[in-house]
Every structure is written in structure tokens, then in C-alpha cells.
Length: 230
Image 1 (cartoon, rainbow, N blue to C red):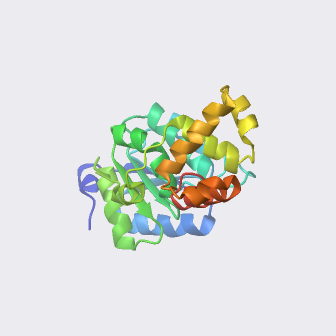
Image 2 (image 1 turned 90 degrees about the horizontal axis):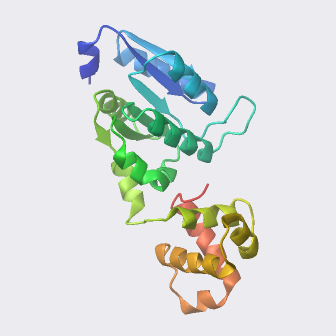
Image 3 (image 1 turned 180 degrees about the vertical axis):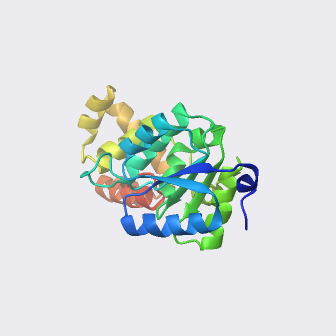
């Protein structure tokens, strides 16, 4: 399919954010075949995204979630999510397309995505080229398509402090007392947060709840499966 936008503008700019050279080159070829004329800029880190945005106005940002903060750092989904939140906050009308192998983490920032005023589409890298181009075209023209993360969400609603508990427990390996200190709350409050998390994760078995280790292990597995933590 052809881009509606490419018929209206003599030239437009796309920023492609990905730290894998092979993926970058392949995506650039596909975009150049579809859109003429087009200027494709490249960023390989979260830091470079905002350097590029300071220097020019972009019609679309195509963002992989698993990126490093700076050159030499390890690529992580959490970095991409943080960069995306910052991008939407600073540029509320920027058209954005997510192109990633793991799109589940997007459910963590569902409210921000729903409030974003620019085009916003989600593309799994496993999708076909036709699907990729259709989502890119939709984002370029200011439309939203987030059906995949709606499927993952399944009614999950997490308060920020509950997500903090998951990250501190399973990303940093902290126990409840240390989590309470980091969050500035009482240990009983942290235990209350866990009960809410168990409910969200649908861990209801009385036998499982009698064994803290078993229930925490299952909570970690389910949280990762649902994309709530990396």
C-alpha cells in the first residue's frame, strides 16, 4: 500500500531507533522502497533519540524498545520504555511506531499511550512486511493501532507502587524490609501491595499462599509472562 502522507508532502523525515545494524539496514530498505522521497535518520541509543529531535522536526519515530541508554551500554526493554515515556511527555503530538520483538512491556504505560495525541502504532518484528508498512503508514497519518497490547492487557491495572514492588523484588532482589525502606513505607504496606499483586496476577490458591517462597516464585513467572517486568 502507498502512504497517504507521501502524496501530500514533497519530503518527510523518519527517525529509526534500533541498536542492531542488520535490522536497521533491512528496515531502511523497506521504508525507502515504500516512501519516496524520504529522509531516514538513525539512532542506536536512547540518548541519540533526543539529540535528533532537538535538531529537526520528525514526521515519525520508529522505536525498538530494547535499546541501550548510551553507546557501550546493554540494551534493555526498560530503557526503551523510559525513553518512550519521556518522548511522549516532551512531544505529545509526535507520531510514533513501536517496532520490537517484545511489545508486552507497553502495558506498563498504557495510560500514557492512551493519552498520547500523535499517531501511535505497535508492530511486532515477527509480523509481515505488509503489516509493518500498514502500521507505519497509519502512524504517519496520525492514527492509532494498539490492538496487540490490548490483547496482552486482559484487564490488568497496576498502581505505580505495585510495579515498584515487582521491580525491586525481582529486578534488584530486595526483600520486603528493604523494599519498604526504598519506598518510604511500612513493611505491612509492602505486604498489602503483594496481596493486591497476587489478585492482579490471579494467584488465589490457599496452598500457594501458605508458602511465601512458592507464591513469590509464581508471581515472578507470571509478571514476566505478562510483560510487567523484564
